[in-house]
Image 1: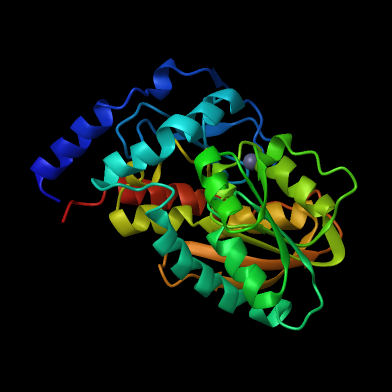
Image 2: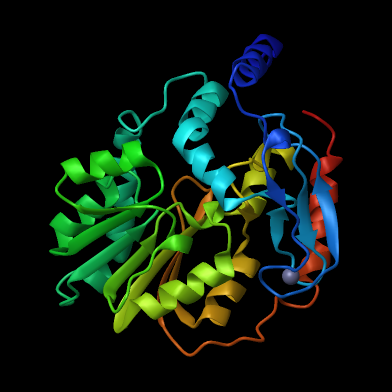
Length: 308
Ligand SMILES: [Zn+2]
């Protein structure tokens, strides 16, 4: 990337009326995955140049922003800033309309992954949490004969989902009250890294799924994100409170009560997907001994790799 490109990117981002430094935040004192309280600061800026800190839990390797914007601040962020910020970063318009092509491709890939568990399964209902414009939910509904509902905090994206004839729920999953309602298929497509409480949300999802149901979740694999650019800062972004790895996501799933049926390294070499079914929760599950030291050593190696 040329320095002119970097400069114009910084100028475009600086022109946005947003700075996380002036937003309300909360300090994380307990690791969301293991409850530990000793953290290692691994980054002081994100890919946009904002001053945010990423911490790694010394006990389990979970990486998260700390401090992190409050739910209200993220609500405003998704309404006003998220797509303009991503557009400024990439130097092209990315909005509720333009993302649909990419989402169609994503939908086809994830449908292929889910087909063995959904085709002819008799499963009837789908809740797509963080379902954006509904392209993915719509594709799955058509292909597998599901009644689909989309839950998303971005109003413009929910409007697009409604136009597709999907049931829509505007809001954050953390604030969604399902009452007695249960679903056969629950999906967190490209969403888990955006959550404010991964452990709490997975427990809620577990309670929302019928006993014979299927749960899908995919992560931006934090290790893949820093290894591909040889930069930890390039892998940190204010829109992601969490940075999951195969170790931490697997521990989260086991803790919440999911058995992983299939793991998939996506074609983009960045995401890792999990197809799961409900299982008994295993509250004490931790990362493998040694994996946290290995992660921190790898981060140091990336931070200090000679530039190409
Ligand atoms: Zn931890």
